Image (cartoon, rainbow over all chains, first blue to last red; front, side, top):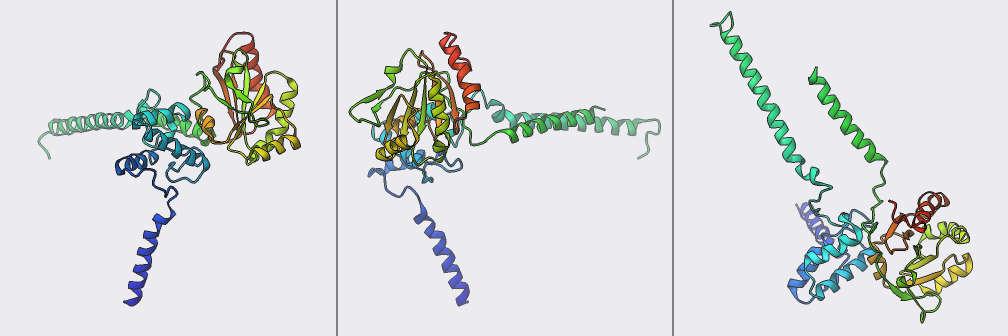
Length: 146
Length: 180
């Protein structure tokens, strides 16, 4: 029991310690609302050096520079959309972790609906044909048998 | 019959997409700047901080911006190629020394030679962000009208220079404008 408890405590400690590994540890703003906006937006922007990290998570120099840009833009009163547009104008849509719908990727966004429609169409056709076949069988020359 | 042809055709289309996907380099991010007006900058010169290097001074001619730093291995690799390119005298080669130690950068140019007509020193990295730079070395071609014509991400080679840059420079000089 003691051992189980110790293992459990260790696991909890390790899980908690994750916070100590955070890259961007210094608070950017004293105002909690601005800080929340800052954290939100840096978590939505991709670091292009290490492509599977956000700029909040990356310790690349460029990510640090981009965090500084975000901080200064928020301090200058820019809206989140203005900050996103600033990044897109320089690095393209790829910087966004939550991609926008554009002419280029419209098909991708529409794909689930299109595939569902195609599936439904196929299903209806198959069901109708089977129903017709079943009807033929029951009404056929040997009709009446079941 | 269609029962087999349709799934097979879909399989071929999917296969083609996946095959093309395999050939592409996921670390290559196309620049949204191509065809747009190049971002303006005015930065202190690496050699003499009192002397500014400004993009406005280059209006009216085609030029090349090469982003480098002494911390960048690929930049050392391409330096010999840049020296060759500078000898051709096709366009002015402007360096952007990105987030670098100025003394180390000056030493680098003394040791390896200086292919640049001018080097702008971007110590804070703000101009690099304006240009959408994410990994040195990066090389931009800017047309006489100030639009970005081409961007090469990776060490420059003489093949890339001959294939992608020289024809665009020739076209820009002939006044045909962007050729992308």
